[in-house]
Each structure stands twice: as C-alpha cells, then as structure tokens.
Length: 175
Length: 192
Image 1 (cartoon, rainbow over the protein chains, first blue to last red):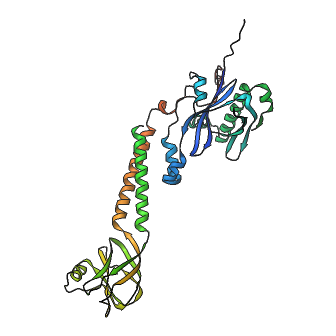
Image 2 (image 1 turned 180 degrees about the vertical axis):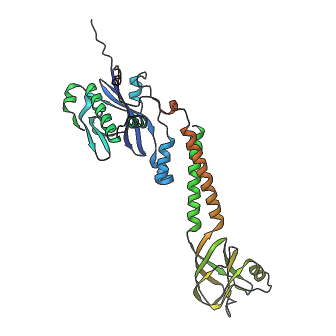
Image 3 (image 1 turned 180 degrees about the horizontal axis):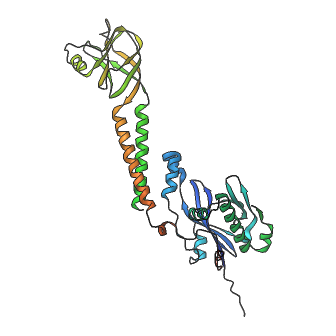
C-alpha cells in the first residue's frame, strides 16, 4: 500500500506582535506554517503587577527589565511549540475570518477562529516593530510610519503565503 | 538575571520608596484619639509631636465631664512638669470643657500636649477626645526619603547603563524582521 507523509512546512516568521493579557501586554513571535499560526510567547511584561507597584513608571520599568526570550523558530519541534501552554496555536483550517487593518494605535490583526471545543474565538493582535528593525530603518532614512507600513505589508505577504487559498481569498487587508 | 537588571530594579524600588517617604513627610497628618485621665490630682494625659520643620499643630478637644487644663511644653519643661518641678509652658489654657486652638511650633524639637484635671474635676475620671492636625515637614522622614531617592536613582542609572553596555548579541536574538523561510533576503540595490 502506498502512503503519503505530508510534512508541515515552515513558511514565515513574524518576529514581534503584541497580545493584551490579563496582567499586561504579552509579546509573541509568530511562526507561520502551511497548516497553522503558532504565537510563541517571547516576553510577558506583567505590566499590571509592575504598574500596581509603581504606576506608569513601574510599568515602564517592568517592560525594560523583561528581556525577550530567544526562540529557535527553525529548529524547534512544531508539536512542542504548539502544545506549550504559554503559546497560542491556531490551525488555519479553523480560521473563519482574518483581517489586517490600520487602526488608531497601529496595525491590528484580527483572527476569528473555532477552538477544538467548537467555540468561536477572536484573537486581537497588534503588530509591533522590533526596536532593532526600527533603529535600522531610521538609520536608512525611513520614517517610523513607513517602517510600520512596510512591516505590515510583509506580515500580509507572510500570511498570504501560508494560508490555504480559500481562506486567503477571504482575508481582509486594509493597510 | 544579570547585575544591571538587578541594580535597575533595586534602584527603582528604593527611589519609589524614597519618593513615598518624601510625600508622607510633607503631607499634613491628622489623628483623633481618646484618653482617660484617672481620678487623682497627680494624673494627666499627653501627646507628643516633634521633629518638624515649620511645624503647626491644630487642636480640637473635648472632655466628657468637668473641665481640664491644657498645656503645651517643650521637652525640658515637660520633664519638669512630670517631676513636679517648676515649669513654664509654651501655651496654657485653664479649666476648659472643650476648645479649639492652633499653635506654631517654635523649633524642630519635641513638644508635648498635656491635659490634667481642671478645678473641681480632680475626683472624677475624665475622658479627653483630641483631634490633632499636624502640618510641617518631618525632618527625619524627609532626610531618609531624599537619601533613598538619590541612592535609588544612582543605582537605577548605573543599572540602566550596565544593561545598555551588554553585548548586542545577548539582547537581539532571533529575527528582527519578517522572514520568509527558505527565501534569501534580496541584495541591496546597486549604488551608482
């Protein structure tokens, strides 16, 4: 009997996005495969805790002292990344709606999907420009606004390459 | 956790504590309490306040029965009063059932607010309720607060500088831009 082994393919890496958590914003990197989006937690600032201790200054310090965690996106085991409770894994087949639009405060990616339990859920993601990239683009004479736009365009391209055609066709790009 | 980060956290925490102490040091304090002068001519109740810059005491008191004598003493005269020696109060008001007054403290030393039995009230227990509002700057709290703030700020700045001097490789791990896996980054356009 002939069998086919379809290996999950890594398509793209988005280095930095932010998702609001109960204890403050959390930074994730996104590993896009041809089957799913894995949001890998890279930095949880716990800004609410720091903010309670020292107000806005405390929240800023909380962010400053929390280093982003290194993730080996290309080498890590996909199943391990996906099953880690800290991370968020969304199978592309479960996506009902995906949109990227420019809103007040930045570019926002919204993913409506069905959980394995059959519940509809929406993930609100804010694209964040890695500081090193922003610094590099500024040194090239690019304005912050344009650097953000370029970044969001690349995120769009990354998703277009990784989503199944039927879902990609329904995606809304308002950037 | 590296040294720079520890210094930064410790510095900020110390600075915040110092800042809090400075605020407390300059904010007015208010307290209400009730004390009973037991029966007997030798008994009194007292409150002390001191260590203030530009100190001012506002007092609102009342007695449940009879009258009381009110004194404000400095430390020396309070000791004399306590030991039955000759004393000179800074302020004195005899035989009052209640009253309101305000007094500027002449210096930063310790001052004592004393109530004893008024005329014809020495044979009863008297409950004195006092509401004291103290304004002025607490020298001790202010000093500790400023020291903590300065030390904390120095530690935070040193910690911040140490963090900035860490090797760039330690901080910027992983990709810094969107990466399409398996695709090469296009080379920069040729310059003329």
